[in-house]
Image (cartoon, rainbow, N blue to C red; front, side, top):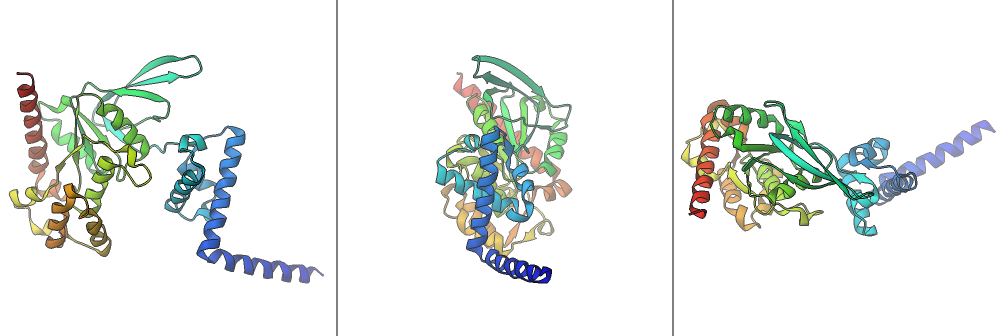
Length: 313
């Protein structure tokens, strides 16, 4: 009798596993699991970020990307925002400099100001912005850096410059999270100029486009005033950068270039990269051309100061 039970259980398990191997069935199972987690969160009043939800059922979701796609689908189906679903912002963005956040307690309609300042050149995590109603900075210039691997190096190089104290550095660590974008959108209301430094490769340029125009799931969260100051095609030709610092394009790069060519602002650089057949990361500039990064930023700062003086005449 026991062996019969094992046979039946084994047969059922085999059929279920085959079902789950079919993409449609697997996706449905993943979605049911997500709804189960969100339902329990709603009943208990619990909030979690996307990473925490992923680790609640790693084997079911498979990857963080799959879960994020499911969450976007749930938001579309229910008409609810992440905040309504109890999904907190994922915190990964950092900053170097000082900012002030205004938090409002809706229960008693009181507000408080939280002042944050990084220690020396050490990046500080951007706090959860979900309860922040506004943000300010006294820095007249905000420099958005694509990757954390280069953030400290850029700050260290510019720390020697007289204008260093005027700069607030913000880093989204690759594709920016909603939390980082939320902070920048609040700071955008001030008179600070927002500048961006990104790799001269298809994905670096695409990351800039996410900052500027928003992602597919959050097209209303773009930072209209951000200016991409580097790396541009003109920097490649102006500074005679060694070809040994470039890397070959792969099929994913080519696919991304085809998308970028549809955006007027980015089409020329995308076409330049395609024709060159190469891409360049900022790390390469630091190994041989540290002065390039410094020159790009200092020239832009001089332009901003000049335009400011002209405006006040």
